[in-house]
Length: 306
Ligand code: ASP
Image (cartoon, rainbow, N blue to C red):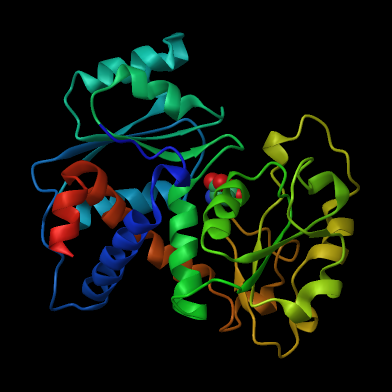
């Protein structure tokens, strides 16, 4: 039984297979004439999200429905976890209902991998603490390839913002380094990871000329035990991506959402065609369709069908 806990669970060949399939799905989603084959008909997928989510949860729901599967959303606030049931027990009970996959988001790093011991279906990590968000990294990879070309080796990408507590940054760093992307981390000292071998700077102006893309991240206030920085307004003064900063450079702007308007990215720049935030959301549905097929039907089926 395979699970998707982090991007390193997949080889480059498998990732390429998933992205090829996602690209085929994008074509069907764009066309009113074509519908994706209902490959997940008669499957039931359970989502259990212990943390808020807008894009990831709805994107998985759309992905399941697009492939003809049914989805059961466990309402955590009404579940027995709020009565003290352990998440392992919750998972074992859900597993007894014979789902074909369980998609989980949890505030604690390591919760999804812990659950793999209590279930007999694939666990898909929809984000765990500051650890990993594998499907976000896969959809970011697809977006970068669409914009910068299939071969990302040597392309220069900056990650800007609260990198230290971001699971999106962790997953992107693992994945993009494997693709040979030249990464630079841009943040004030308190938002940079304590141990990294990647080049870091506190000054976006110093590196922006050399970048092909920037991935902006929001401040993960819910994961800070104390506020060790001034106001977000001060932060924005140095790290907000603005039209003026970007100028007429040939550069792609990305963000996993939710965007803190005028703190992470200025409203004017969000409307700019170089800003790919909504393309990322659209790609997310197709990537999650491909991921679900891969983990539920198996890589052999998935490979043949692409
Ligand atoms: N939506 C992303 C996540 O769940 C990014 C964020 O929340 O900042 O990690």
